[in-house]
Amino acid sequence: MSFLHLFLIQMLRLFSNFCCIYHNRITLLIYEQLPAVPKLVELCENENQNLRASAVKLFSCLVENCDEAIIQESVNQRCINTLLRIIKSSSDDEEILSAMGIICYLPETDLITQWLLDAGALEIIKSSVQVGKDRDHQRRTLVENAIGALCRFTVPTNLEWQKSAAETGIITVLVQLLENETTLTKQRVAQCLAQFSRSSFVLSRPIPKRKGLWCFSARADIGCMVHGGICSVKSSFCLLEANAVGPLTRTLEESDPGVCEASLDALLTLIEGERLQHGSKVLADANAIPLIIKYLGSHSPGLLEKSLNALERIFRLVEFKQKYGASAQMPLVDLTQRGNGSVRSMSAKILAQLNVLHDQSSYF
Image (cartoon, rainbow, N blue to C red; front, side, top):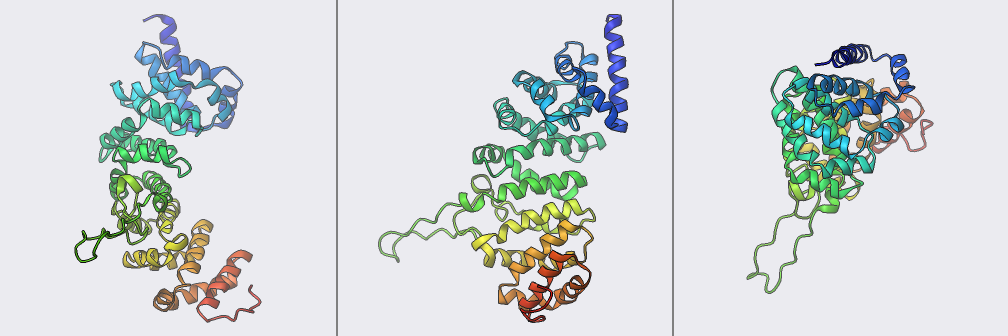
């Protein structure tokens, strides 16, 4: 190994450790003013494993905070193929972790996502998740990054990407990850499930009409309780078919508000639009509604807003208003006293639904 190679390796290790430990914005700005990212992309293809691994580690530290325009200019399909090849074949766990971290934080452009898809990223992501489950800290971080990389494929604005992801069987794996993984993994898993679920109603297949004499025709299929049609995990990404409602409800009791908010987002896809009646029944059966009411005392603005919006919809239904309304009254009254303008107004609106406040109250 030449002196130059040794020098580069030591310098890259020094800078990558500094950036990853301190995430100093000044240091990142220095790199953004230099042609550092294109050079790092080039070094990621170097045949010297030590040099390559150091470059990949430094790149992973920079990509999370670097200007997206710089990343987009520097990353091409060849770079994507190189990173995925490292994940598949490297013997250096830290290099694998760093390469997946780069993919996790790449700009979510259609072009980069398509490059990843064409290069077989989905199967590699799934394999990384399965390898990383229930292992040491480094492996669990690999799972965090892999699920972060998966999120770009689950956006409801692109059904083809969602279908490609679901075909790998990843949804079943995601549900399993809600039980014993890190906080960040659970949050990202719930985000993926929420995005999948937003497409379920569109993808649920209509139940075929029975033909001929009713008594002699084949027995009709029973439709999904929430979506009304024929659902499956791979074809319509249905949370009920995936047995995800229970695990998502259990994560509502986590202490981290980010996890709770992401899980609540996923569960609330079940009561969107015309699914309110049946979706509310599913939430009630899973004992999710008392947990939503509990969020009325949360200090997280996101959780508070989402719980208020959910309860306003759920309490439109007499059955649930009678069953849960009493337990929500006092927290709602408290919010009319201490909440900001929109919180006070929504709390008062729900209290009016519960016949505690008059519709003409000054809180509106």
